[in-house]
Image (tube, rainbow over all chains, first blue to last red; front, side, top):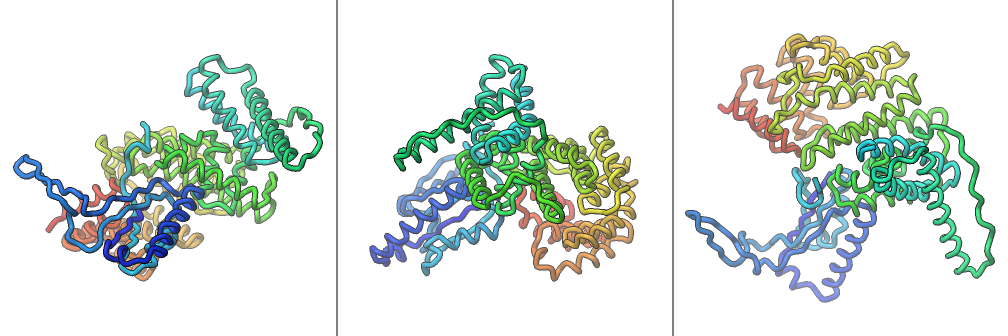
Length: 124
Length: 406
């Protein structure tokens, strides 16, 4: 079963962390990634640029309109994700609980099962 | 010989060659790696240059050389590290006896130290003869992910100190149940093709049937093995009828029974009959008997629901499970009316395993629709559609919801 573990970050919360705390988060993600690779449960992972760099695209009357900034006016934004393939939802939750963000107030770690997948993983 | 013929031959030979290698060299994990390399070499060479006169001997020799090379280089490394003198090379061993080690390998791959995902992957590779790339495609994960999973599984088996022998007594029985469960998981993975590459997943169902046939050939007296094979054949027989050309699900009562595969049904039904004559009844046998009852009806209206209900009652008694009760409620609704079915469903409401489960919601929706409660049916179809992880099922449930929209 595949699950997306999405990381919802709050830039203000991250900015308030000390350098040691930031380094610990980075190390924690590194170890988490390594363990996922070794167990054969990682499909892929991506981290995204700061939400301020986002562009929102709308098409009105057939004309595309591009505005700067994130779509949602929120404190938290999608910062990145792990796409995993594991035994069941319990295992996905167990894995998610090892992500350092889960232990920090104001950062969100969300687990959702994948319903449809396609792309370059699968060559016909 | 064409490429598919070569692939079929390789898959057939895989467990026999691997068994011979493990008997000769020990070290399941090294032998399995070596055989995988030999199979890859054969996949390239045989279609182009022709299949050798003794393909099994070819594979055994090529893989054996690789195992010995591996042992040599491991030893050389150790000797460099310990500055030891050279030791005589292991002689080429005598020809091994022609035993069928399929069962032994299946037991090893279903080792209890492994997760179900690892058991299925390793079984497909070591017994099924599929390449890591093929297994990765079938499970929709990158090849590197599957390679890591298989390698981890082999390390675990090594660490558990497993020997290449059959367990005996109750342990054998217990391990055989795991083997059958792994084969059933492989089959279901292929059957419930819900995403991406349906073709490759259909192959999994074929592969599960092929492997279960191998087990059945070894243990023809085991009624659960027979039951599982029959269940797979009877389920597979409906394959062409269970989806439309557009990929939409067709429920059992609306399927075009003319598209069911008669040959598979006849074989499956024959196996069910033979197995029911045995001393004990098991869950696979009963599920196969239920599938055979459906297969027996020329139209949905002619289904012998009393028999289906009776079989579910026995199944519920020997293997209690809320999913079985749920299915019994469907049969009960057919014989006693939808309200009786709904009453039985309500006994599942307190079961944590079923809370918010899409199957409970969809069966309830279906029975509410039959009582004429369209508002209730609509609500439950919608909730069921939101709860499922299958796109095909979601589409089906949404179409049912639209039909009863108040």
